[in-house]
Image (cartoon, rainbow, N blue to C red; front, side, top):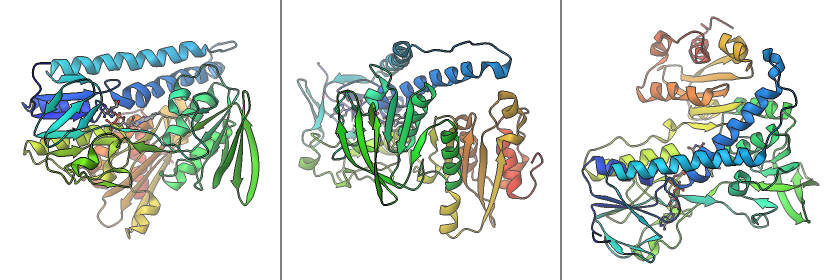
Length: 461
Ligand SMILES: Cc1cc2nc3c(=O)[nH]c(=O)nc-3n(C[C@H](O)[C@H](O)[C@H](O)COP(=O)(O)OP(=O)(O)OC[C@H]3O[C@@H](n4cnc5c(N)ncnc54)[C@H](O)[C@@H]3O)c2cc1C
């Protein structure tokens, strides 16, 4: 490699790193990205995208099973697991190739290998050159969190990687953790006929969501025969040839659950090891890199973005931080990312999506609130789709009309939430949202009605 001097080096080419590198190139910087595994990071290869491909297969399978209700025939629906997984891998591969193309098009240099800080303005690459740049962004992401006693073994005890590429279809699966990742896999496996048991330490599933939405999600999952244990913790695990026995403590009692496989989905651990952080003096907090609003660490010239920093650990947050970081380096004075304006989505059946404060948080923050609700049962398009399970809930500040939060469960809500995200960015009040014309018939009309309802004006319910 002849040229090793850059304006910016990014370590890690996930949705944080590759987006930062492309934005830097757009701004005229000579950018380089160092990647030790796959372009696109966890998101494209092992996270967001391949899971959605799997869930799409589950969705089609579910529709085939209900073909009769649409006046169609689909006798004995079946699936070929190897083909379902192969489709998901092909989707990931297509997007990985897309990132390669985008980096090339933007003239970003890609260096393969493990990158490590190696003194001021230097990055050493394993078996490769030492690169130099005045600005270095750490975008090394995170990996599945391991808890003692539940160490993944690649066979009986899974992380998301094994759950995404199963060698055989388990008849039963225990999912430990009911955040978005755990619930998406629970939904996928349950839809294809596996008996899924979810074990959650908190008192509800999807614990970061609004309590009402969590409760509706639980009800919907249980109606699909998913077993859910909340306020429950795993106390031990015993492995046999092709099954696992998990002891669970809940409500003061310990019971044993037997399943063919266990998926541990209890969050992620930022990748901070072997990066030369300590030697460079970069401050860590709770096992992740500490940054300010412009993604600067405490060491001038070193920045961090995405999953290696504070939660929420989401791809769109990583990308946004990448853009903010680079624009700040260029002196463009970007807006800081407001944590409460980052939407969160769970692509289970039914889908869940939210942005901003939950009702409880809003009340605890001292807001006098107006809450609006609209059920999918009152929406024409939802009825036509045969998807009448759902609710849109809005939370407004009663005095100012500010949209404090929006919470949804039901069909297409992961696509719709951005409407409320735009509203929050534009700092609209209920008045502009009420004035907005929503197309008919769409599920999005629920969003309008949920705003109207907060002011006692809902028409269709
Ligand atoms: C199963 C699953 C489903 C998910 N679904 C969603 C979803 O639907 N929506 C969503 O927003 N988020 C989702 N996520 C989270 C999302 O994948 C992450 O938030 C996102 O990938 C973080 O991006 P990042 O760029 O910070 O890190 P990563 O995507 O983790 O990328 C980091 C990259 O850095 C590389 N790297 C690490 N160390 C080094 C080094 N020393 N040298 C060189 N390269 C290095 C890694 O190989 C990796 O490619 C999901 C995650 C999982 C596991």
